[in-house]
Image (tube, rainbow, N blue to C red; front, side, top):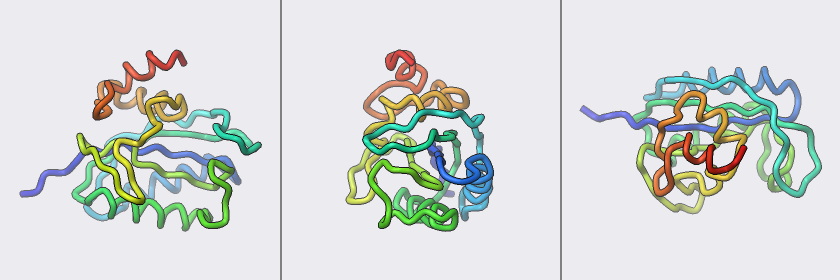
Length: 157
C-alpha cells in the first residue's frame, strides 16, 4: 500500500473578496483526488512583500495528506488558482493576485525543478507563511532548515 505524504501549503489573496476566495480554495484543495485535508489555519492579514504597491493579503496555511507527486499537486493548485481568476502570464511578479497557492514542504522532499523548488525557497523568511503554519504545525520540519516554530522565533516576528 502506498503511504501518503504530509504537505504544507501556503494560501494568499489580496484582490476581491479575499476570505471567500480562500474558503473556496480550501474546499477545492480538500476535494483534490488522492488528497485529504488535515488542518487549516485561521486567516491573517499581512502586508504585501515586494516592489509592487498593492493591497494587504489574507494568508493561511493548510496541511494535506496526498498520494500525488509534487508536480501533479502543483498542477492541480494552479488549476484552482485559474478557477479563482488568476492569470499568471498577465500579472507582475510579486504583484496583486486573486489567489496564490504554494507548496511549502512536501514531506522531507528536497527538489529543484523548472516549476517547483522544495522546500519553498523563501518560506523560512516570510512571516505570512510561518505564522499561520506555526499555528497548525509548529513542529513541522522544513527540510534543511529547522521546525516551523524555530524559524518563526528566529525571524523575530
